[in-house]
Image (cartoon, rainbow, N blue to C red; front, side, top):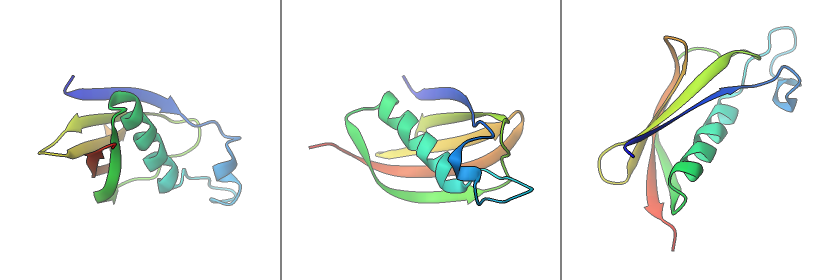
Length: 101
C-alpha cells in the first residue's frame, strides 16, 4: 500500500483545549503530529520515527472539525504527511523513519 488515509475529529472536551486557548480553542500542533505518528504505527508497525524533517502549520484546526491525515511513501525512508480539513491544508510535513531493531 503506497498511502494511508484516516479521518478524525477531536472532541471539544479533549484535555488539550484546557489552556489552548480559552475562548478560542485551537488544536495544538503537537496533538496533530501525535495523530500522524499513531497512524504511521498502524500503517507500518515495523518502523519508527527517527526525526521530523519538515513540518508546516498552515491554518488552525478547531474542536469538532473533521480532518483527514494522509500518509504517503516518499524517497527512501521518508514518509510524507498532510492533514487537511476539507480542501484546506492544515499541516504538511515529513518523517524520517528507520526499521525497528
